[in-house]
Length: 48
View 1 (tube, rainbow, N blue to C red):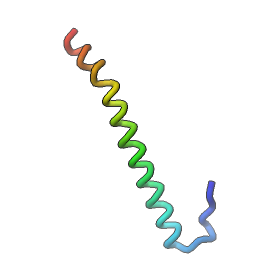
View 2: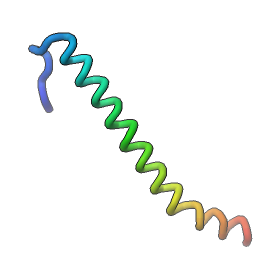
View 3: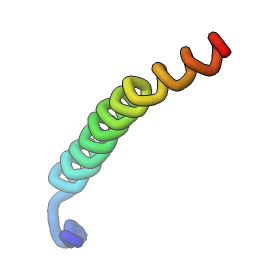
């Protein structure tokens, strides 16, 4: 893990914002893929 303890507060804040943004993007893409895979299964269960 990268250590930002010696960096300025602006760098630390930027790294935190970047990490949160990256996590949000990964979750958005992951849940989108999960929905694309799961929706046909849910539709089949509804019809049954």
